[in-house]
Length: 259
Ligand code: CAA
Image (cartoon, rainbow, N blue to C red; front, side):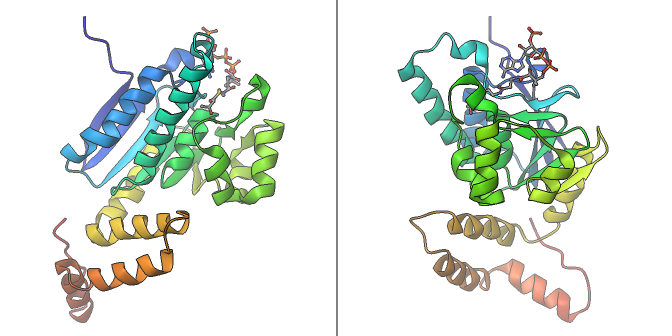
């Protein structure tokens, strides 16, 4: 019998909604789910024609309450390291997706769940959103990139506070700290994310992809982001999108990009 997938994909209006589907375990990320998401972002996403991706959790209690702690107990140190490496590959695939990815966070995003949200290009929360890295409560550290991505958003002091105290950050604090782009009413994070992706989808696709690329270059120690920006700026000026965008401005009309 084929194993059932642990997330579901629904496409509507050129937006893909990926829903983590383990509601009884608050969408905890077991190895199978990490593997399936990795396969999706590395192999399957390019087969869809879409303007954006929303990652969310099933039910109203959690985006994802972290890695599956019960499964950890069955794994040795070598397997744990391999799982962490696979998780890192998934986070890089999300972060480097040429199509914008938004985390729509209802309820808890903790541990590995928070780390997926950190790898997304934007995060929309609700008043019930709670974020945190409680790994020290378990005697481990974050394993899917929070030690590196959290300081990018909130700086070193606040990152250490989140990871060392293991306390949960509520929605208004997360907004103040820049962890969330917007807070909406419970149940509305997916519709808000769709609106943002529709707006982005009306822009030139190549330019959108280049913004994602060049901003990522700032955080890549092997890249000179300023040089990347100069090269991308030059290349984009040779595209049909640039011709249409500038022509539309001159004709005082909305640009119609062929995405
Ligand atoms: N792994 C496995 N199962 C989990 C889980 C997790 N991370 N989080 C919740 N669950 C399960 C619970 O065991 C429970 O299952 P049963 O009904 O079978 O007992 C069910 O989900 C509901 O959870 P609770 O009864 O605990 O719900 P609650 O409302 O009392 O508490 C919570 C909610 C505060 C989120 C609590 O579940 C919790 O603290 N979860 C663990 C959070 C955590 O420590 N995450 C980090 C994991 S380690 C990690 O992610 C490492 C990494 O970086 C890769």
